[in-house]
Length: 141
Image (cartoon, rainbow, N blue to C red; front, side, top):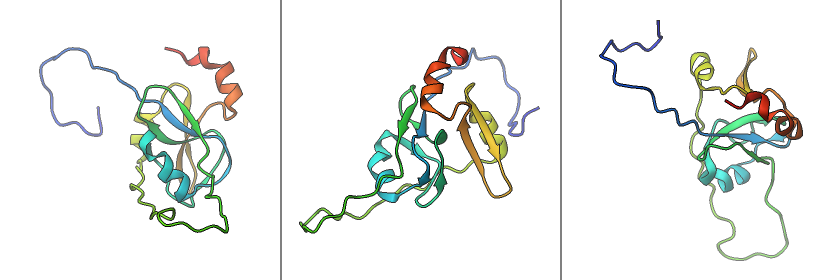
C-alpha cells in the first residue's frame, strides 16, 4: 500500500537510485539569510532565515552525492567603509517543507526524523561531525 498510488503497471526494470547528499549544519544558532544566499548554489534548503538550528541538523539537499557540513549562522562582516554594489539584495528560494510521510521516505540510513509539536526536522544520528566520520562505515551500503 502506498499513500500516493496512481495505479499498477507492467514491470519496467530496476529503479535508478541516485541519492544526493545532505547539507548538515556545523554550528548551533539561527540561520541567516546572508549565509543561505551564499550557499544556494550548493543545493536546496529545508530551513529559512531566522530558523533555529543545531549542530548535526540536516538543513538541505546537496547537489552532489556526498554530505556537506556548512555554517549557516555566519553573518555579514560589518565595516565602516562603504562601496557601491556590496549590499546586494538577498534572494532566497523558498525552503522545501516535508510532511511526515515525505520525510520518512527521504531520509538515508544515517538520519533520523525528529518530530516535535511545533516542527518536523531531519537530523544525523551522530550530531558531531567527528563521530559521523568515525562511524561512516556503519552506514555504508
